[in-house]
Image: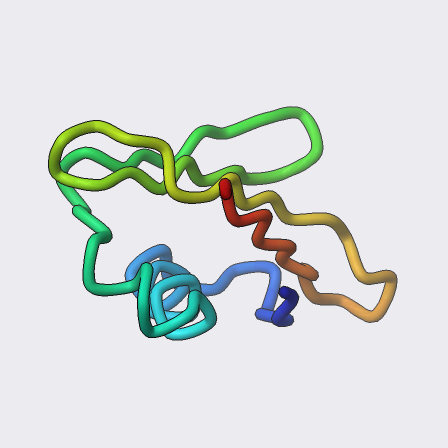
Length: 77
């Protein structure tokens, strides 16, 4: 799954995009307190976890060469 944001997009809005992009089945398991954003050399990554700490998804962003960030969400099966 993918979505595009502005380079300087608010982290709260990015989180909202991630949760909305995840399937309905897994989005209700998402726990913001157990999840985290990580700053990398390439941008920003997000580890999405459930309240029990189970990994639900890995998300990362890349420069889309148009002045924005392209986010990829890899759901954990």
